[in-house]
Amino acid sequence: MNSSLLTARRAFLKASLPAAVPAMVSGLQAGKVLKVGLVGCGGRGTGAAAQAMKADDYAHLTAVADIDLERAQQCLERLKAVAGAKVQVEPRNIFVGLDAYQKVIDSGVDVVLLATPPGFRPQHLRASIEAGKHVFCEKPVAVDAPGVRSVLDSARLAQQKNLSIVSGFCWRYSAQVRATFEQIKSGAIGNVVAYYATYYTSPVKPMPPASSRPAGMSDVEWMIRNWYNFTFLSGDGLVEQAVHSVDKIAWAMDDKPPLSCVAVGGRQIPAEGGNIFDHFAVNYLYPNNVRAFLGCRQMEGCYNENADYILGTKGTCTIGRGPNPRIQGEKNWTYSGPRNDMYQAEHDALFASIRRGQPVNDGIWMATSTMLAIMGRMAAYTGQQISWDQALQSQEKLFPDKLDWNGTLEVPPLARPGVTKFL
Image 1 (cartoon, rainbow, N blue to C red):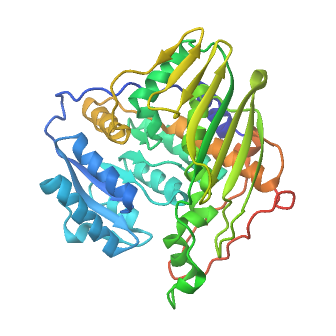
Image 2 (tube, rainbow, N blue to C red):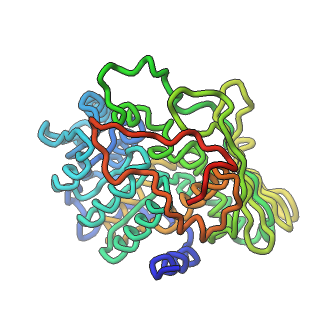
Image 3 (cartoon, rainbow, N blue to C red):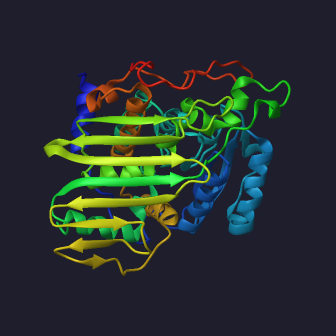
């Protein structure tokens, strides 16, 4: 294993829970306008921008980037309705195209919000950190192992530059889930011996029929506009959506990687053009024969559930079945404290860290959780048992080095377990 990977492994073992969100205080930078740039003007990006401006009295949105001018303009109209004069994006700072992210970074912003499809995330994060910007980075942070390794490098660079990276793994900023994991970490259920997580839901962004593709639209534009259905852009549903459940598994395991995993998955409902699975089941093996199981599905007309069942030597913890997390066993406990908006809390933490000059860096653990999901996808796609070291060192690069908006792009066929090779 090369020195970069060894460093990453040591960093994984040292990863810890994010610090409690600090209250806003006066300080050296109090009253200074923090210019915010948004990269990705879809629903999640629009929400992130609104939360960023709410998090700080002097956070102003000054630049946006997207592939679609109309969507960028619609985003700004929605934001003006909730943030008013804090939206200060001049027409010259509405950037469109695959290079628009760099134009936002170069426009003089202090903070960059990254909310494009995940395949772009490593490149955008690296460019932001190299330019000295604080970052809100949506989950997942990559779609392949080379992307994860890039994110790890960016996280270390951010630490050297005293820059904040706050992750979009929102459950780590939920008051009730944080309190629950504090109970687990304090031994309320004893030693964790097994974890079962579910993410059974409906399709997120179904692939439209090829007949709906406008005449003359390039492969690249068609795929980006339907990004969820292509592994090189979304990472697949396990990596893009169920990674929230994977992240809670990682949290329970102190962000230490598993030894290996096996998985099953496939495509039950045909989709024309895309290449993602619609169901997975992953079995992670940790030291001391501790197991973690994840089931996820994106189908209509099926049982839906998003829950966590954590089994310990002294009790069990359940999250998501009922209004409040609860523990049963030697110690019975039910969360009864206040609830918060975990999406808002992410941005509160980010801007408080900037004001205080005390950077928050979620980089290592957000990369760990992303890699854990990618590892599960690798095992399902290939039908092989995959070790952590194999996954982290994988040379499979899904996201192209260069994308031409008007170009052609051949997408690999749907994976076939037992036939698709691990790289």
